[in-house]
Image (cartoon, rainbow, N blue to C red; front, side):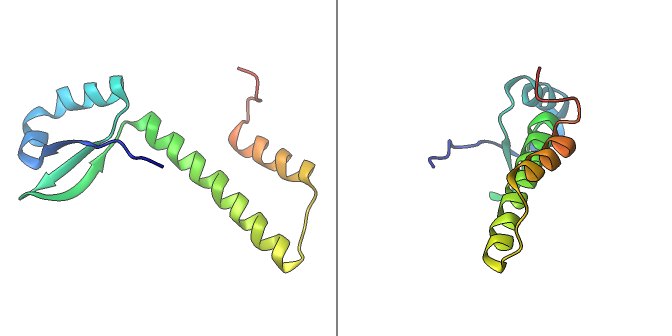
Amino acid sequence: MTQMPLTHKTFAELKKETPVLLDTLAAEREPVLITQDGAPRAVLQDLASYQQTRATLAILERIARGERDIHSGCEIDQETVFEEIEREFFPDGLDE
């Protein structure tokens, strides 16, 4: 998978431009690489993207757990798995 280069800001720019940077993050939903003394130190992202990333990782962890269960002979039916995922990640249902 090809990754797009991150916009980057120095720590000094972050301190000076925090309100504008937060507005830009919310509007553009693109992460920003924060550097300090020329070295990468952190990635800043908007809350909605962070929450989406966490939900995606949780689903992927479930899939990995399912793979391990299959290899160890512990299986549950597909319908049960989907019901569990829907309950946890889509409590209001799948329809938008």
